[in-house]
Length: 192
Image (cartoon, rainbow, N blue to C red; front, side, top):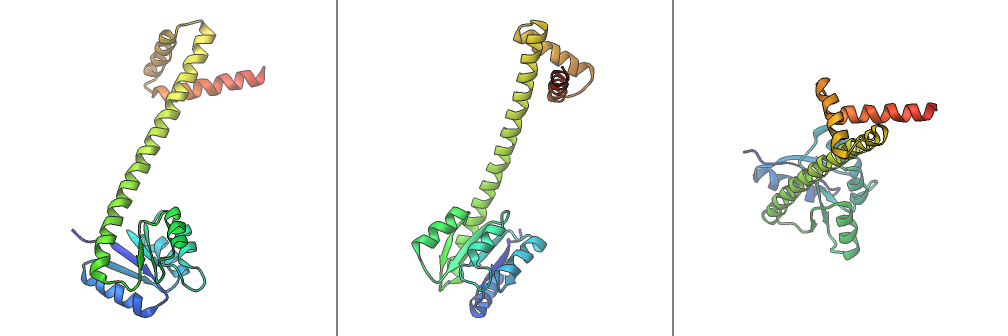
């Protein structure tokens, strides 16, 4: 199985070359950027699996670059173990904070751990999206049932059956019928 695509952004050519060569030898596909703007451009074009960002770069620093890479997991790289910087970058979503000088053999486990964590976060976000969607659909259906109960003086179960029967007769999803019913009711109420 091929290893991840890693983007390294560092203005120090020696650090960039050392990390890039070491990680290539470890089996990663490497993309290189010498500043934040180039890192953002490469992320948009190449969509790496993870990015390693130096904090102090001319122009757009690593923190600003991280803010712009909303969909790309990243590790921060710095010559300083400053607690404020660590907190600031983790609040932005950094999956790790590496302090120079870096031994390539020691960075590989950090990359692998960050990639696994990024995958977990991605799955959690997908799960959250599905749950939010389900809640919105349940709310639409419940609202439609409430309107039907009021309009036809039915019990909750009877109103649900009426809505479900209508959806089945049209071979459509219950939530679609509920949404249309609510919108039609709102339109009628607005026109009155």
